Structures are given as C-alpha cells and as structure tokens.
Image (cartoon, rainbow, N blue to C red; front, side, top):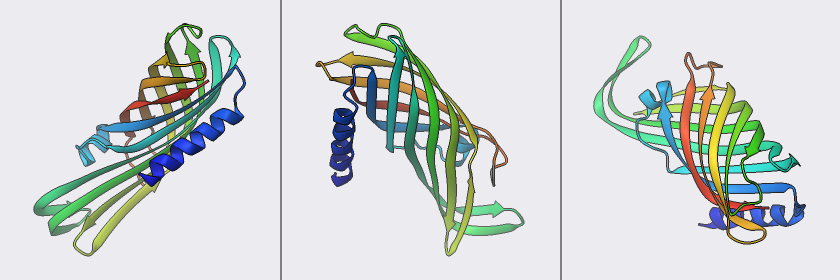
Length: 196
C-alpha cells in the first residue's frame, strides 16, 4: 500500500510539473498474461505490475514519449521430477519472471478534445527480463535485454480538466536475447489515471 501511495504521489508531482497543455502522464496498474515461451514457463496471470507513460503532443493528435513498466509473473509447480539440461531433480518448483520494459513511443489520438478519446500507439526499445526457477536448494537464473516492439490500443476518459481515467491493452513482443532461446512476450491490461 505504501508503494501505491508513493507511486501516485510521484505521478501527481510529475503531472503538476508537466502541466503544459500538450503533455500527458499516465500511471496504471498492470495485469500481465504470458504468451509463447513465457506463457509455457508460467501459465498464471501476473497481478503485480505497474506502467508509466509520458507523452508530448507534437500535433493535436500525435504524441511522442516513453514508457517504463514492470511485471512480475509467479507460479508454484507441484512435486514432480523435472529435467533441466542433463540433470533430473524431484521436488516443488517455484517459477518467477521479472520484466521491465524501457520504450520510446509514438501515439495517435483519434479525438484528443473529446470526453472519450480512443488512441493507438507503438513502442520500440528494450526490456530487462530475468527468469528464476527455484527447486530445493538450487536456483537456475536466466536473463537478457531483448529488443521489444509494443503495439497498444486504449481509451482515455476525461473526468476533469487535468485528470482522467485510462484503460489500455499492450502486447510486449521481446525477441531472443541473452540466456533466452525464444521470445519473451506477454499481454498487459492496464487501468489507471491520466494527467493532462
């Protein structure tokens, strides 16, 4: 709860600092759903995530900016025999995947002056990915910095002059990198506040 209050306080401070008519600051709670290799590794949804976006409108309906985020996936697997490389171990597995994207974004706002403003965006950059498999006394850790492309669609609802509600869906497609032989990709559903 303290982290949420701190995050919201920082968001309000940044929004106040960036009070220019053509700046947007979005802070959202993020729920993640793994796909591909990540979805095979952890099947459960992630309810531990946050997304932060800053957008600067260079024209009334076009904005450039950046996105920072964080999602942690976790799953406990039952007692079984698991084979990793040339070793087999029997026991419970605890699987974690931490992902933090850092992206440059471009956004198209379909109706920036309206109460309801749908938009589409694309993000390009990198993502720090770390995956841990804990079993008995052993830990296998994999990490990498894959190149990421992130399409996004969303809706802004302007609740007041400078504050609104934001709902969006993002797909983070991370390519092979580091210790990962396949892509690290996931969807996020984000709900939060937008400051304009």
